Length: 378
Image 1 (cartoon, rainbow, N blue to C red):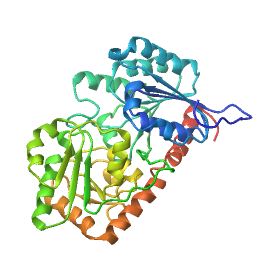
Image 2 (cartoon, rainbow, N blue to C red):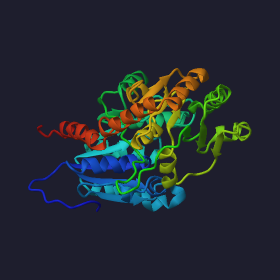
Image 3 (cartoon, rainbow, N blue to C red):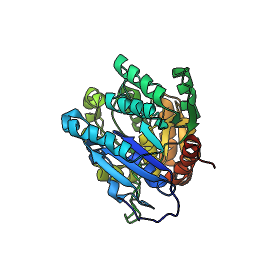
Image 4 (cartoon, rainbow, N blue to C red):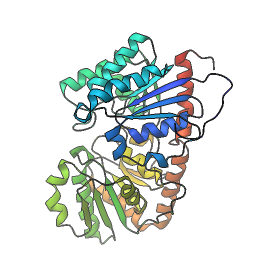
């Protein structure tokens, strides 16, 4: 059990969250829901170990977190059936899963549908990315369809993602709601604040082509030719780091980190940056954006997919057309050369993190939906 145990005079709603991926997201959601519900959270050991230090996340009331090996390559022959029992033995009123096209999560959802337990499915990518993301092959597509058919309610990160889902799954008969992606990588209250370094730009994440690393490098070239003081950090792993590695090595203002970055080091990267760049060519939502705002850092981001549902131009970041290096360079120059604009955008990022992207706020909305789904009077 995690958090401070409380005594309740009546039975609370029981919610099981099954999360083979998105451990930090799920843990923060469980912490927010714990104010309203009895929660059992089932996590994948490999994913949980690779993400933010979960024990450092504040928990207002106790919930039950269980960490299992959910891959057959990592003792999953024991962990997977045990995780199913974790969910079923909890006798939940609601089960909340993440859409990730794997066979075992799909089977669990279909078993739960047969048992009559309502299921909520968070869809992170209503339409898969051109590469990477939640899978694009025929087998993944079939699993995705089965998962959606098993769900009573789908949550998506913003109105743009809802529109994408309607187009991608026109036969879906359940409900749909917008539930924003909450902040990630939030530094603990006890941590000393790290001041941003002047001119420091962060490009972070899994380096697939749709993330726009080539566009970012073109923009950095442009900043250099304009004489704008800057230092860019490109951190993450993926095919684009290999393809563009020689180019980055020849650029004096770029530090490339082609390696796994620990959660603590990741937090320091965000906090030491003046601005975070997200020049995505296509996108739905972004955990990098959630981490930037969680660390009170503004963004310069492409106006694509669900990003404009979170980034308000001139308030908490600047929006640019996707695949436009000149526009990206212009926006980065504005932030780097105007302390007043940078301060305004950073304050906007902080307010967004405390408001729409605050996990307690998100949990309040989900709890209301859970109650309706479970047939509990408001």
